[in-house]
Image (cartoon, rainbow, N blue to C red):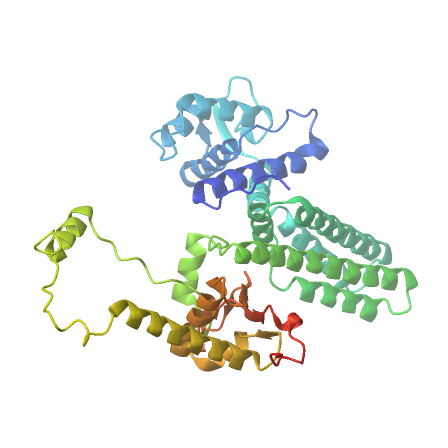
Amino acid sequence: MGEQLAFGDGDREDLAAAVQLANWRAFMAPVAEDAGAVAEHPEVARVALAILKVFAEHAGAHGLSKAEVVQALKGNPQGWSEELIDRRLAVLIRLGFLESYLLKSHQDRYVVRPAGLAGALAAERLAEHGGVDELILLLDRARAVFDRSNPDPEAALDYLVSCRNALQVFALDLQRQIATGTAAELMESHRQHDHQGFTRQVKELNKLVTDRFSGDWALEEAGSALIEAEQFYRLQVIAAADKVLEQSGGSLNFDVLTVKEYDHAAVKGDVELLSQVGAALVADMPAVWIEPAQLLETVEGFAPRSRARVRPVVVEGDDEDEDDPLQWAEEAHAHLRERRRLLADELLAADEEVDLTQALYEAGWSAAASIITDVLALSDDPDEPYAVVMEDVLLADPEASLTYLHPLRLRRQDMAERGDGGQDGF
């Protein structure tokens, strides 16, 4: 798979422009004279749509001249130059998108040929949904054939086969993108294929086949093939969405949707669904931000007044009555080690190894922290026969008092050397 594209707005627009251009080139291929028939940048199509809008809003009874079109687009928000507009007008005139009002030489007033309008609208639909709209139009035309009082069986069969072939082509293209495309490309494709009621249209068309041509084996077979193609297509649409969610969910990527889509969800979305967005998220508290000057001031404020240590006064005759502080510390440490050994043996319950994960969940946050501290201290002591294994897996439960935890196992390493089932030998 190629390098993953970032999901920023700029990269998304670049990807959409590349997809639009690829779709337009494929769209024009059946009637193109050579490979250079389609422009190299989708901006030229936007210029054509702007010219079409000028003719629709400003044309008089005798059309518009080239100078009037250029003047209407002068100072446009897109920043198109007059040279670009002139060049596009020349191309549109040569191809017949714009026709002379009078079919005479040296006529400089033009009108829009309706077929050019249809092409502009088709190009706009193609940019938005990658040709899926044409498939829906094909299904509607097929239904119109069956709705006639005396439908032609051959025409009906041709439309069914055409619909099936179109669905198969779209499904195979989606299957290829799922195998080779990035998450950003799959998101763009899924938006193009986001049509409601697609399955319903195919089922209704298949029902018309049964109602109008019952017993016609060829038409019934074509209807069944259409259903199978639609199911294959729907599976690819779902698989594309699943792959996007899998990749973006694993990386906690919130750019699966655009900013506008998140904004629409926040305003129009169901309250119960919106409340579940952060239910399974695990996040640490933000660190406290302290300026360096404030840190130095705080340290200076809590520093001892005297930097030199002063030896305490020794009173003669009291040495024998005072406890040795080092001895007291050693006894306290020995007591703590013994307590930790008893805790570890209690958790092991005479076994060589035990999984502490469930016990930690049941103990609660405070007790779990104490248990983890004790067993880790035993594991870190080279004189103790205990070892702790902590796995990388993160377990999260927002409802529990212990919201997140790594699986933890405690093992006593000298159990294999002990001779009577866990009891020390003599």
